[in-house]
Length: 213
Figure 1: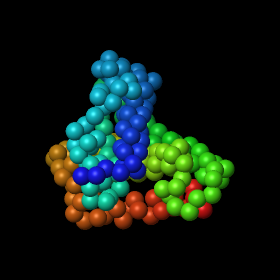
Figure 2: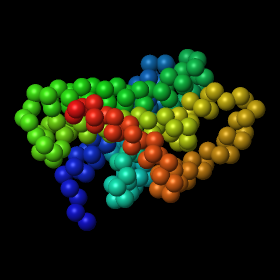
Figure 3: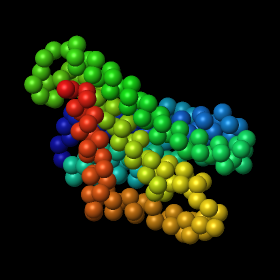
């Protein structure tokens, strides 16, 4: 199978984005008193420490093959809520740190890509853009997809952790029964119903228009 340059750029951006996503969880947990991620060696830029076989490799590869957005997730950093100063409150901050990091990186990369486009050579197709501009835009796009994707309230995504901490205690037993089926639901949403593409494609289009028009 031929892998084009743009796919390589996207995968490279994805690896960087998911690493920074996971490190942010560990850093925020550390700030609130939990050293679990630090002691486990997860506050590192080494991608090997963060790769999840399905989320980092299989899911984005399947997306690329079938022409869907390239997105995924990394192996969750270990967090011990009991070590946090105020576990229920602090876990909300720990959970939101990943998507917030991605959306912040998206904004920074989008501004940089727009500036590079406005000050670069006049081109007529995306492929004619300078490599640096395409990398910046790809990094913005990947972080947009990761940020929104991880906010979905489906285990093991960050949005599910936020939802779990907002649910009434009496609902938690049923929630715990649902959690093991989260990955299956993700696969259904992505590859069988196209629901996720309907959510993400308009966001991609808006970002593209903002940067290049």
